[in-house]
Picture: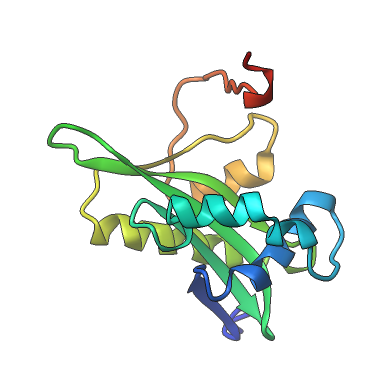
Length: 162
């Protein structure tokens, strides 16, 4: 039995972003709830518009929708290379709401990114994952990723820059 035959995959754009933002808030605070007013914030709206985030050929959000509700998503960013490799898609986030896990939805979202990488004739698809995230590592191996080199993930909050 196909558990996710009634699940549609859609690309997030300006027309469905506000509805999608409920899923972002679910991930952020761990609880399913109604609309999050912060996603109507002027600073965010201006950022999305100025950089054409929701209609960009460099940034992609695909989401799974069941019964007219967003339940999972994946973000991928196109990183160009100035040589014959052309570029790669970097998977920045992949998240499935807890009640919908272990149903093959994350794998379908990964396959959507693979399909995009082929369409764009890119060199690779890359991601990083915590060594301790065994569930994600198992999924990534299942869909064909190979682990290589231990690397340190580092980030710096822009708020700390003087």
